[in-house]
Length: 62
Image 1: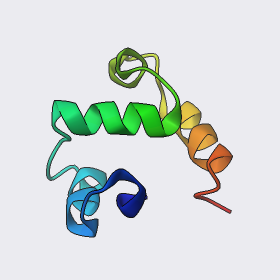
Image 2: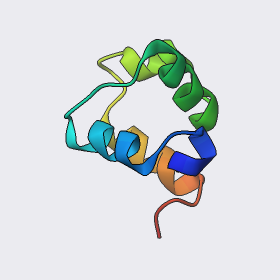
Image 3: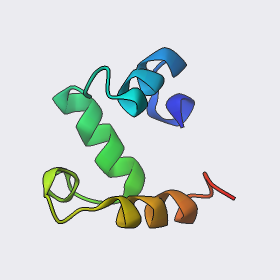
Image 4: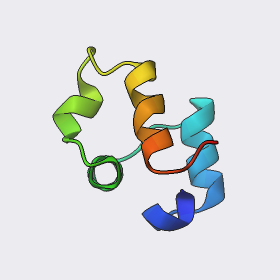
């Protein structure tokens, strides 16, 4: 996924671990990748189950 977003694995891993948060331009890239809006990503109603559904739809999980 990092390569698809044009970021390093280290950057992606820092997001996953909660060490860092994406910058606005990176949020835009993530939203485009998952075909959702930045608002959806930042909305409290956007839950982890929905995130997993999107990841599976992209073929990133088995």
